[in-house]
Image (cartoon, rainbow, N blue to C red; front, side, top):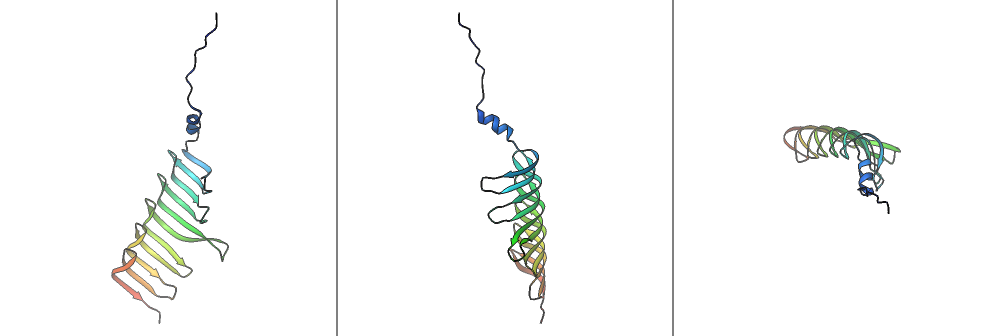
Length: 156
C-alpha cells in the first residue's frame, strides 16, 4: 500500500520576502532603484522620525524630521557647491507635508537670504530679506512677495 503524504499549504515566496523586507525602526543605508539613499528611522515602510535623504541625481541632502514619507518637522536642505567643492546649506527650518512651513531661513546666494515665516513653500507672514547689494526688506510677505506693512532699507 502506498504511503500518502499530507500536502502542506505553502505561501508564495514573494510574500515571505516582502514580510522580511518591512522597514520599521532604525535602518542603515537603504537605496532606491534610482540610486537615492536614505539612512534613518522607518515606520510601516515609510521614512518616519529622524533621517537623512541623499538624492543622487541632484546631489541634494536633507537632514531632519520625517513623517509618513514626507519632510515634516525641523530639517536642513543642502545642495552641492561646485566652486567650494562641498555642500551649501540652502534652507534650514520647519517643514510640513514636504513643504517649507513655519519659521525658516532660505539662502539664495552668499550674501542674499530670507529669514521668516513660510507657508506651502512660499514666503508668507512676517520676514526679513537681505539682498546682496546691502538692501534689507522687513515686513509682511504673501505668495512669495512683499505685501502689506513693511520697510525697505536701501544702501546708497
